[in-house]
Structures are given as structure tokens and as C-alpha cells.
Image (cartoon, rainbow, N blue to C red; front, side, top):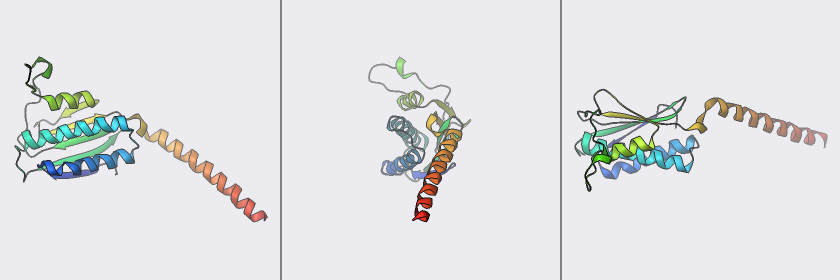
Amino acid sequence: MKRGSSAEIFSRPDEMWKMEKFIEEICDEYNVNNSYFGNILIAVSEAVQNAMVHGNQSDSEKTIKIRFNTVPDGLVFSVQDEGNGFNFRHIPDILDAAEGEYPGRGLFLIRRLGDSVRFNKKGNRIDILFKVSGINRQISKIRIDQLEKYFSKDRQVVQSKYRQT
């Protein structure tokens, strides 16, 4: 999955598997470990469910766009619906809610599982940053160069042995 990849799904629960597959492919590509994969999957799933129910008002003909990007800090997943947005500055605190009420449960989980959360001005797109240190491009490049150097030396040794016989 290359930087800037995206997926689009309809606002239907039976479309969630597409979002899950999209995330799984990205996490495989960037070698995201299982514990962090769970955080990403749950947070993005909550954002998509909020987009379906609250943003698109459960209109199965409306779509949700899921975008992925890498940044120096990690991975960013954006979820955007076709709704009118909401005032993200006035989200009830789930910890202050009465027993049995769960206002803002999805956003609470997203904020706890992601490292940074932002909304667009309209309030119909959420960007979730996951600081995944394993994708540091500079370190990855050094490791790849070292492996290639090692294996090219190994190949040269093997080739020289074959030439001698």
C-alpha cells in the first residue's frame, strides 16, 4: 500500500470488511506489530461507524472515504463522510455521563487509541495519527542497504567459489 492510498465504502455495516482489509494491508506493508494493529483497527472502525451513523445518517447510498498517509511521526488515517459535520469542540465527556449513557464513546476510544486526533473545519473528517516508530524511513533505508550489502558479499563469495571449480 503506497503513501496516499485510499478506500471508499458505502454506509452499510456489510462494507466494514473492506475497511478492515485496507488497514490490514497497510499494517502488513509497514510491519506494524499486532498490539498497535489492534489500536489502529479499533480507532478507525469507530471513526467509520460514527461516519455511517452520525455523519451519513445511516443512508446506505452515501459513501465514506478512508485515506492513508505516512508522515515522519507515523501513519495517518483519515475518515470522511458526506454529512454536514458536527461541532467537535463540544463533545460530551463520557466520564461525566450518567450510568448507562455513552455519549461520545467512539470519540473517547479514538482519542485514547490514537496519538493525535484532528478534525477538518466542517467536522465531517477526522485524521488519526498513530506514532509508529517502526516505519522510520531513514532507519529502514540503512537496514535495507546493510542487508543488500551483506547479501551481495555473500553472492560474490558463492560466485567466486563456483568460478574456482
